[in-house]
Image (cartoon, rainbow, N blue to C red; front, side, top):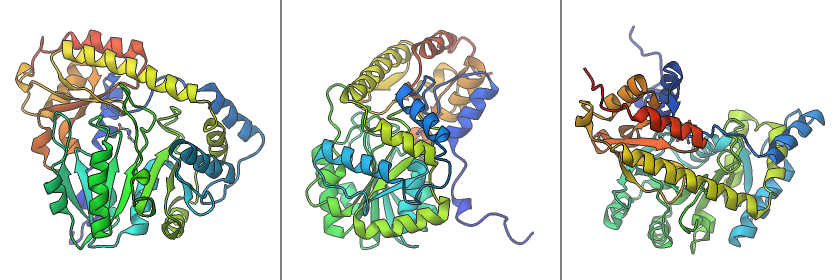
Length: 393
Ligand code: GLN
């Protein structure tokens, strides 16, 4: 055959390792601490609202850029929390999850040959998103233990071809919450080089130890050059609903809406109706969410440390990045360790290398998620007791 069957673009990235780990976990009846989705129920209010919307026959296409009540709820919520005016008619686009929101934003704002800056370790979709939009990803490394970036290294990544920078705070996989000072450095460079900030804030409400979430759109001079991405998934424990959104400057929203329309037409209508109801939950709901995740974080930290993992304590999101001792089980790298863990021990985690362009940086790391019931975490604890008893043969 003279021609490959896939496109050159598709040839530049691999299948999602996170989703692959979930499949492997299911195959081996594992405790799945790999893909980040809750194994506990969503709030009654959002489920009841979704059922009611279906019964009321809210079952046809919503407005392609999002049902009016949901867009209004998104705009009101953002303005109330952060004091930034948002016009639901000209700035909000509802998408099929933040996954589509991110890809659609890049397809709508980036041209082939443009460069997109991505911090690594990254959430693994960002690289393929940049490539699918025709852009060249450029990586800047966040370095442990505090997952800080070197401002000079970041400045050196900007140039005339830079079109966008992707930020994810609270961060997956590290749990880092970017400080206002760090956001200020990024903002200064965006303004200097006329670059768009695309900011994935899906873990906005999952934040610990008194840390505060600061949206990029609130940083001086950024509101007109920021696309804020969020979703119902993590805040309301409905990752399978696929309802996310963008808040963007009006000049860019037209392009985002066009791309979104041709990619997916729209997100599920009854679930959008339920989202509008969920966004009206009282502040006590959000406090309860953060508190319950803080307890789960503390529990999994304690378990992992007891079993010999060196943990980086997350300030937000629901993952713990760990350093592993490869020699304890005779593994050559993180991938072999993760395979051993799921096949022999029955606990699934994500190999650290899948969050880095330079896989060497992740060779001794594994990511565990703790968006799980206490009993699930305790079962992982029991299984991890077998760690190293039977090393890789
Ligand atoms: N955000 C979750 C994770 O990082 C799930 C991502 C996904 O599979 N869509 O594990």
